[in-house]
Image (tube, rainbow, N blue to C red):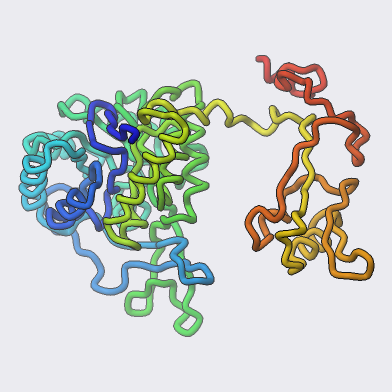
Length: 436
């Protein structure tokens, strides 16, 4: 079996699967259950400074988007940081770390944007023997209205400033958790690096209103007839998160900056995708809240078997291998040509491909042959948009087949796979810019 052990900025764990800072990591009982189930580490739910207690709502805290089969696609929450006393949390963190020394113990923190509170809470966390801290600059609701969370994460100068404070006042690695509620994720990542942060983690939740109750006309979840924006997470945010991870991984100013990937990780395949985009650990929340802690067994077993099949002995053997294949649109190979092909043995004659292509795309599928219901691709009209593949209910019934020779019937261009490097080929209108 492949070796899943990781060493993320000096934080060692038996596998890359950590529980993200969230309700599942709010207390010793939960964390111990997670470690018994096999999780490699946790990020303890965000701690705040001593003072006036945090008061959460005593009504619904979650809203959800479901698929047709009631599978959870996205979860929205309006819960704040931990409402348990700071000292109780610190005692439990110290006890759990002592009992589980081989597991990663990272503590999420959020205090006002002043140096003194950060110095004080870091000293307290240092005494727990925790492995690292994660600065919560991402929470989009509740705390951001108080000048913390995403209100800090949206200002690169604040990120750099707080990261620098924390590096001065702790022995532990400092991970900066980034908010996705920003136009360009590269700027806060660059600021974290400038401030001396050891790593970044992303994404935190997306600011959202999950739905409107059309009987009460209140956002859900509803508290006494009123609702608020919350944080959106779960499988639906994974594409957003992967893109932001990739932007940081390939940016020349943050290239090589360690990343802990977060966002919609539900199975081992999701985790492998994040690792392929350079993540050194992955954090899970919604999947654990949906299916329980035992899902980590499928995650570790599946990832290990896949690595064996690929000949990867350790995570490092494939970490970052996808980064070089992420590029800007202008550098894509315009000489590459593919066509859709329908496997008639698998086709169930439902007509979804025809309806989608005829009504909304390129009229590249015929629907009858010899007077019978029959669907076939018209090569001369197919632009390989892939819509038919995505709407087909039968897996692998429709596939995209690369064309390696001949003439493209739509453009008249020769199909030539001899272009070894499209980036610098003279037929590429962006060749000069790409070379630069």
